Length: 68
Image (tube, rainbow, N blue to C red; front, side):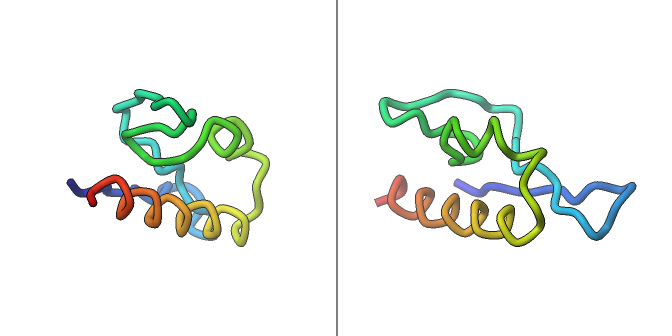
């Protein structure tokens, strides 16, 4: 499984939402499309770039755990 994140075209200083339009929450309220939890999904637009990078790192960790 590969999760591809798209950068926004209007602001290269920002990080685009990792949403891949495959939304399905598991029992821990983690999306099986982008691997963000529900709180991260809801807060995404308010996060600064550093916080978004932190969320993306957590998503990658969740993806690895999911693939085990």
